[in-house]
Length: 247
Image (cartoon, rainbow, N blue to C red; front, side):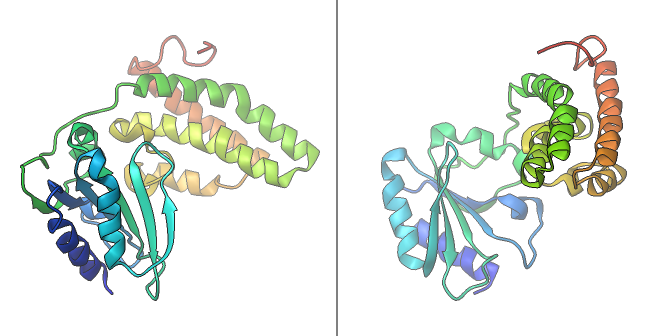
C-alpha cells in the first residue's frame, strides 16, 4: 500500500460515518512534505461521544499489527499495519469541533489536506499559544541552573546512561526552546522536531556538532545559548540581562 492509497482508504471510511463532520491529513503533508519515511497524520472532526465509534470504524478497515494509545490530551491512537512498511503507520486523532482551532493554525500546523468537510469547519485560523513567554523563562532558568552541574556530575561519576538523559533534558531541550524563540517564535514549543527546517542552517549545523554530551560540547552550547539570550533581551522578550534572574 502506498501513502496515497492509505489516505484514500482512511478518507473513504471516514466519509461513510454520519457523525463525522470533516477529515483531513496534517503533519508533514500539510507543509507539502511527503516522502518514503512519512506516516499518515489523520484527523476526524466529531463529538466526543462518537470517538469510540470512529476508532472502531477505522480499525475495521486496517490490517493492524500493533496499536498504541496516545498519551497527550488528544483522543489519539497509532496503528502499525501488518505487511506494510513500518514507517507507513497511522496517527489517528478524533477532535471535537470545540477543540479544533489550535490544530488549524497554518503557521504551526500548515494547510490541512482536506478529505471532506461537510460543515465548513476546516478553516485555518491563527491561534498562537498564550504561554510561550512563560515557557521561555522556564527554559532559560532550567539551562542556567541545571546544565553544567548535571553534566559535570554525571561525567564525574561515569554514569553514561544518566548523562545521556541529562544532556537531552537540561542542555538540548532548553537550548532549542531558546533558539526557537529567536528564530522561529511561532513554533517555539515544538521541541527538537523540525529543527532542520525551522532553524537557520548554521544554527542547525552547530546543534548537529553538539548533539553528543561532552564538556567541550557543553561549552559550545553555553556560548550559543548566551548569544540567543542576549538577542531575546534586546527584543525585550526577557527582562534584565537574561542571565541572573530567577523564574
